[in-house]
Amino acid sequence: MMAENTTLARPYAQAVFSHAKQQDTLTQWSDILSVLAAILSDDNMAAMLSRPDVNNDALLEIINSVSVQKIQRDFKTEETNFIHLLLENKRLALLPEISEIFEALKIDAQKTIDVVVDTPYPLTEAQQVAMITALEKRFECSVSLASHIDESLIAGVIIRAGDTVIDGSAVGQMNKMSKLIRY
Image 1 (cartoon, rainbow, N blue to C red):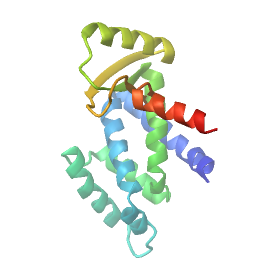
Image 2: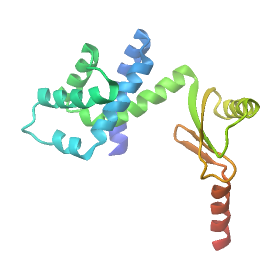
Image 3: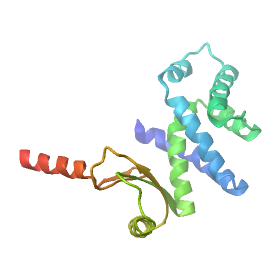
């Protein structure tokens, strides 16, 4: 079912991506799709979608009202039209997959990736530069680095880049060793 959803979602994601790239609104569409995907991932919303007594206009109104809280504005005409298209084609439930494919297309087009690093202490400028250089080499694209302090880490770092997680923390390394010792 997952592969089927991806196949069904791909043309929508590609169309939105193409439009967003033309209009130079990749970041805005990324935010919109992310919010919509989160809304549609909610169990209550999924139940609402499966109810035959709820019409498309009511669904659009509900989605818009929830989205306004997240993005601080009403949908633009093109965004409303996109949601209407999904509703008419019974594809609204594909929004999580559409968002995921859109993000992959965006990263590929921009040749950049957002990386979040959890550290037990603030990184120096030299450490940040060294980390960015190493990550750009590994991911073969430019890296946008955000650092967060996590005092629960004793030493080391945890790096998150898209779906990739690199746990170089002391706790993570000890957990790996304890698993090896048990077997």
